[in-house]
Amino acid sequence: MPSVLLTKRIEFAASHRYVKPEWSEAKNRAVFGACYNPPAHGHNYLLEVTVRGEIDPVTGMVVNLFDLKRVLLDVLEEFDHKNLNLDMPYFKDRIPTSENFARLLWTKLAPQPDIGMLHAVRLYEDEDLSAEVTAAGLDVASVTRRYSFTAVHDDNQGHTWDLHVTVHGAIDPVTGMVTNITDLDRLVREQVVQPFNKQDLRKVLGIQTASGSILVKTIWDQLAGQLTDGTLANVRLDQTRDLSFNYAG
Image 1 (tube, rainbow, N blue to C red):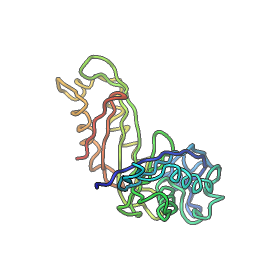
Image 2 (image 1 turned 60 degrees about the horizontal axis):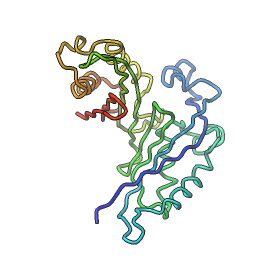
Image 3 (image 1 turned 90 degrees about the horizontal axis):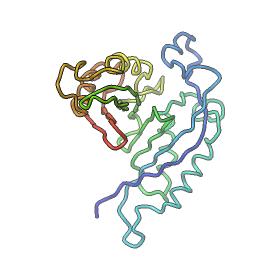
């Protein structure tokens, strides 16, 4: 019987700060941006845990959802409403980035026998930033950043487009990041948001039809090869709540 993926979401709260004490303030700010600001900042984290397994012929389930929820609550109780820098020994010598935190949660969840085979852990700091680690390896991660802009395309109506940019790569052992988010924000702002926002995309691109499929590939082409760290893995463009376009090279 083929395996099935099941994803469970759960929320918790914690605070953190990105800082390397041995670095100067100027370097900390250059690398970590606002995440360096003292004393710390809080997040209502959203954790998505995906498990893989065959469907039990008796229960019809991949895993008992009650057991899965219980394990998640038990694991997250240690972190809920804590300052990750000050209260958690795991981050004594590493920065509590989303990538490092997702990797830590994987190591906590993977040995749990009641949740089956762990497939992926995705951790959202907020709606605009998430990090994902998978069974492919814990030294790498994918980071997804969301941006928005408003533009006219084929129907002469303005749409608010949500752009999700995913970068994949090794987790830097010093910064704890796959890519510098400040640099990524600057790149997307300069290459996409500023040229497209409040514009007629047909005029900007010099084409008669500015469909979502054309636009998502155009955005990929604007960003690919220009990242300072990591590799562009996917671009997703949401035209509406019910319609999105993906491009992965």
